[in-house]
Image (tube, rainbow, N blue to C red):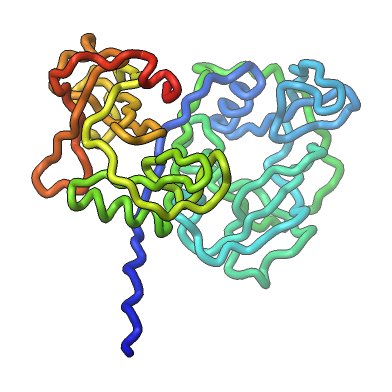
Length: 320
């Protein structure tokens, strides 16, 4: 008897990406503006140590600290690790070493890249110096990397600095990005397969008998495995919603629009989807909706009103 073919393992590349914007206090502003001017600033804390990179509060006493000092662009490697395959967005495109460098005049180490021909050229205790970026804007990337340096450590002392520069940097935008490959398990693979046939299928818990959509392979309440497939919907009820006023990158939907939690008929968990076919300011809790599929789509493009009377609050209050 021939063995049954193994089910296809679904995989999809996914990217989570967004710009993280933050304002800067006086210490971080001076530090980043200083890098733009090829000046490295630290801060002196209550016990006399000089911290580089600087922090705004004393790590021992938690008191606010503003005593800025300038340190040297040279230093000593305290520890390191070789990066044989640089990733997108890292400081160098060729293999390099991640190093912790205690700059001359500092008491703590700064993490950055060291440009070296190979791991055999890197060692703890080696002397290095900053290689400045040709174009600087007031960011940690103004330090292009570290490079080897033949000078001795000597007895460099940090010097007081007022932290005043022209056109100070007051905020930064740091891109955050996560690339990964997602592979759903058995339950979600079945769910996606049903969606391709324009059906919504959840799974019922054998203990509490609730039907979860999308299914997770286990009941989140009872913790027991779920295997009984249950088709739900396709119609449902809006349980809660939000109005989106910021246009998302690479999403061809005009703002404002509405994203809602929808309890499909027969389901005990609300899923989220976009609401269309109705002015955004007329969407409401209890609105009855149905899915709209695009040609060739593997999932509903959006949900629209069915024209039915609104559902009574008591019928969906447990799913809000």
